[in-house]
Length: 325
Image 1 (cartoon, rainbow, N blue to C red):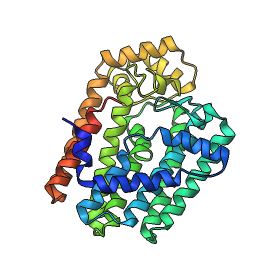
Image 2 (cartoon, rainbow, N blue to C red; image 1 turned 90 degrees about the vertical axis):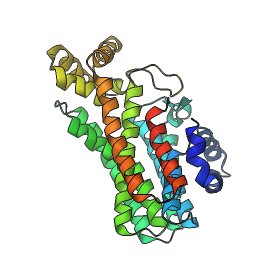
Image 3 (tube, rainbow, N blue to C red; image 1 turned 90 degrees about the horizontal axis):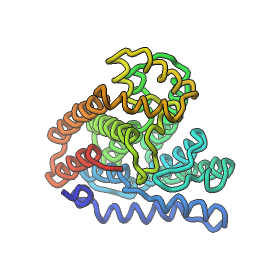
Image 4 (tube, rainbow, N blue to C red; image 1 turned 120 degrees about the horizontal axis):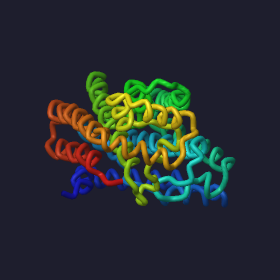
């Protein structure tokens, strides 16, 4: 099945309008800034978050200039957070492409991230919608809190699935939640409809992050994320957390503590990867994705009236689960 074609079908023209507006926001006459913005623009991606916002707006009314400026603002905020995250994590790659900090340096990356953030605020101001402006500002705060919680969790010796979900709800899931909520809001949805849309977005974002975490247990040049990269950065993700808490093997717990302390080596990470696979960690994460999938499908069935939008959102959920990168 061509999921992307099905997902984009109801909003094809709107998506083209978004891409034109977004690319214009990533254009500047200054030589160095223009060069870095072009570097960022090249990694484009599939625009899954703006697509979600456009679909939700379409489901509650229509895509408007308010929707488009909100989508550009949110995508720029997300892009800025990734540029800054790569500095914090000392990452050399992003989506298989050299990161801004690796290509240039940390100073350039931080300043360009600031520029993107300011441009995001400018576009959301164009909506003239105080509620949307507040929502995007709160999203920025939530993303920063999520990063801080993740950093502080590295120092926490407890290995908790609850903390894992707390972190992703303030990072990946928060982005999807805002996309869905602001999309509905921009089309004039009621407060109750907006809250339902936000919960749908959060559940969808949790699926997205769990799938990303599963990728880390397999080699993939396409995503520029080698096996065990999260562990190398001091992060314990859902598959390993489950395997550890389900077996309570002291030898593996000691290696997990080394992950958190930043002292684990490549051979030890390989041991943890195999331990996770052998003790049901991947299977458990797959089951949790299916649990959240059902919650998403319940929302689509109960809240989305138009069949073409229902089909697109269902394909969206399944694409997030089945994607390969």
